[in-house]
Length: 182
Length: 294
Image (cartoon, rainbow over the protein chains, first blue to last red):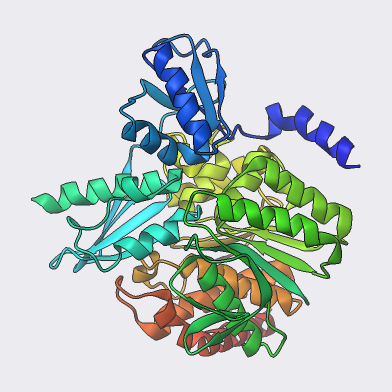
């Protein structure tokens, strides 16, 4: 039965499922080889492949990786001095990350949302009073690190998060900092 | 009914643990472990435990693992759940903060279908994301998305809410359009509880009820208020309520949690939970008075 389900799942993926993989595009092949080794050491399920036709930039090899680990992947590469040309989800066409922010003013408090993540700050003290939304396991972890901290001194989500929820929170955090600067 | 809550604790050192949960001295207790109730799965499990107590039924079981986002704890939990599946006597599952992984998701779903007699399947947070990603959303009984997650379910190409396309603007006035779109692409569970300024209870693309009162704006900013809602709904499901009723009463009770606590956006969900009994009582009163008026 499981065998049949497995066939059914594979056959149905194109029309029913969504790819959980992403692609990292690099400038040079040497970067691909180094990145593959680093990401495999981190126990991430990566594969070296040829780029899809939509990718017009970068070298002729890309690394496919679990999209949910995007923040962790980019962090590992950054720590080793590798800056990819592009990091995109695998799709028939390329998807852009969410770029719009939703802002809510509660009077004493300001909330910024990016995608599924929200951060709320006390406008007077600039203390992070809440983090909400999201669904990946680093969200509660990041919330514990950030809530109660001053906005400009709080640990950055990008440095401590691992997933796309962590990345969304980082965007909300950056937007909050931009709004609270002036 | 025996119910299993499956999720993570935001601490990589927390071990894999299975057992009945309860709330003691403001902490979630499972086996010898005490867990802070701030948000995420501990908040959901604590709310379900308290709701079960209000409903005078046995508390839920939980399978928890420590995972701060690297996914190792989630994978350990997935493997263990498959190992013990044949021995589980659960009538329902609530899957929550877990690292999305399609392969593991499919193994879990098939293990449930192979070993258990059609238990009720509720998915929220990361496990709802992966259920949609897998293409098997329609195998689930209930998803509990907020507006951002609803637009993600509506976008058949998005692998995560972060990549939801720009024309799906998390616009609450378009929730009904997003619901229809999610069902047409088979990216919705049989029931949806869409959380927002107005909550929607949906079955098979039909909106059964909406709830918008009482409205407490600060609740949107408070981490864990979505988890408390899923927790209350799980409690009602454990008590044998039909899914639409559990969702409707859960939404009302969660709103009364806010009204009774009168929170600022700086509150934590733990500060709301002492009002749960009263909030559930209010939800029952309103349900009965609504039934009598029909």
